[in-house]
Image 1 (cartoon, rainbow, N blue to C red):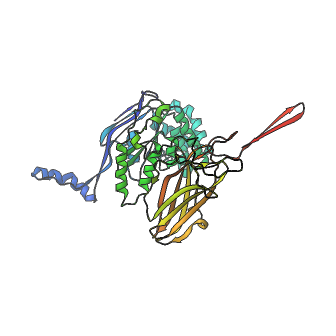
Image 2: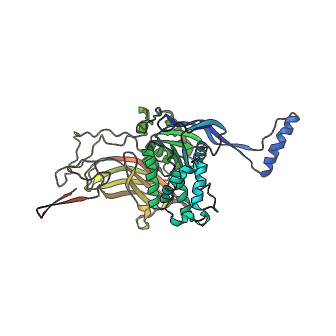
Image 3: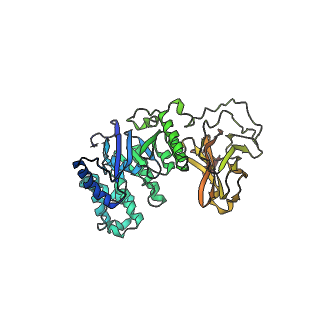
Length: 502
């Protein structure tokens, strides 16, 4: 394992992991540890085959990948899959049993925040102590201290012993110390949700700043939204093995599929993901941050899992006669469909016939801004269930959540009970506020079977729709805020007013 701080940004590979494995010796009873120290040696002396009083546990098995300078890579996986162990090995706080890791550049790690803090020291003293652990010279830390104190924003407590801090103040100072050292490489382990909302936004802004400056970021998160939003590539780890690497949206979708699987079907789903990974070609690592989004390019055979939406055919003739007041129609384009909706495991319910329609019942996937529509689907129940909730999510083409509806969030919108063999028809009315572009619609049903609240069925990317282009739009981004602009010009004492509104 090697660490090279000379190879700064822009010089190829930032992190290279090669066949890394980590094994632990597990003893069933305390006395087995003592026996393992002496009994096998005695048995060898008398010519017997030595017995083992332990079992081998592989936390990681043969993991390999490269991360180029300027790339942002996310790691996802179920609890106990080995994600944190892998990050500790990359940061050098844990040694691998076999394999090699090469890190080129200054690395800052947000693993166990504040792990090096002394509770008897003041916040100021702990900042300098933690900086020395990170390898930052004292002189450099002196001129960085004001930025750290400003970022942590804990006021005069910076000169009080850390043992007097609240848990929120503790992690704020730890995060500020680790994040403000201008790292070439930032490694984060579930540390993106510290403090209140304002501080979380500050943390994300700082991470985005490191990313924009060409820094390399590797982080673990169960928040799939952050993976899709921040990353150019993602890796799925399960059972200590890397089972999938590719675009964030595809990896997150497969992770959700695996995380929602029952124990009886998890092995089958895992095998399908491993087979998918065999058909994906990860491109060469680029040293340019701007090229990193191409690193997870897939062969055409993988397109069935990572849906590609065909270009909208402006001349499509299959229009439904549902004219709006201005004479422009919303309609259904048969070419604009999800190439492969991801159907999660059915656990007592099956969603069917998912569609978007106008209020008068015409099917549509070319939508008009500001007009109301219905998201409709039916659910067949194979099990008796209680406390049922139904949902719809609207996501952008890159998988970021735009808006959604979840009836299980309110007791008054839940359905109390269904019997085996029941069919429930769901109709969710909504206003199209999404600006022109392509969007995915997901749907799901949850309920309680026995004493367990579960996701009974869910379809990701069930429907694809496009918001049609509009003339003279002043709105930008993803959502129309219904904004207006008022401009007043004073000429010769007379105000001239002009107003613009979407």
